[in-house]
Image 1 (spheres, rainbow, N blue to C red):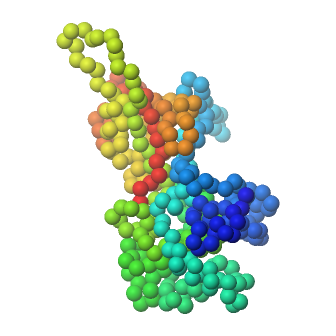
Image 2 (tube, rainbow, N blue to C red):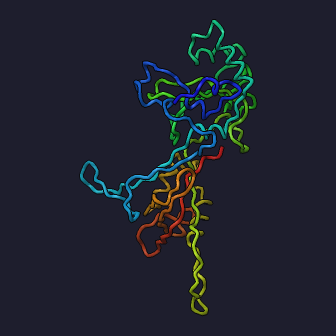
Image 3 (cartoon, rainbow, N blue to C red):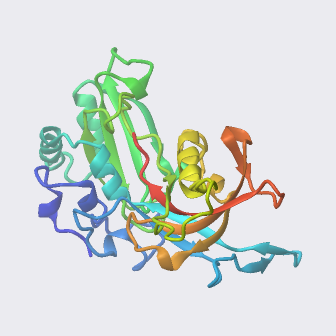
Length: 319
């Protein structure tokens, strides 16, 4: 259900609440009376940033077998992830509430109260001497978001940095899509004047919008049966895999635009019943050959192949 206007006021708005703004109907938003994001339940302010979904796995963890258009068999098992837009942006983007309040007052003046958000924004920032130096819709690139958005970066006219993503002084603006059809149904502009995230990159807006993946060894009970005298303790292959896999960077957005595709090169089995929802992990079986690329390569059925069970997590990208 749509949030009330009080929760969209400058002093209270969050990206979670903006994800449920009622954008009404528009001839470009072909969802009709159904399928719009603003018709979904409110998003709790403590909701998770990520979640996982699973398709096509048998009870024993092996992938189901499907057939392609030529009748050839192929494994159907998929592991997918969702990056929840409101929670992701709430963590990474600080809203400039003074500027938000100033815009709200501007948009309610007789000259602009019947204009759309885009026209109001352009007039508002151009009156302040700003020019738009970059913009995009995140739907134009790989993303795991449950709702897309348009972002814009504005800089003072005559003081454009030429490197807008690293601009020292800027206004970043976000329009959250709350409709059905991607062509229409975008909410009010939301303003930020601080770099996104909390790392040293100082990006004006988040650039990575896909989940990053990491592994964790399973908790195992200690072996109460002593080994034969002189026999060394066995290596914990789960810990070895998790450490090497996480350090490789192979499953992060800096390595690939589609990290889960890299993960699935190694996953042989998946056990969805072990997933507890939210940002918990799922138990998987991975197969790899040690000492390949980055210390290992995908399992190939050879005698050198190692098979281990570990927990797999989908994490929010760090900005």
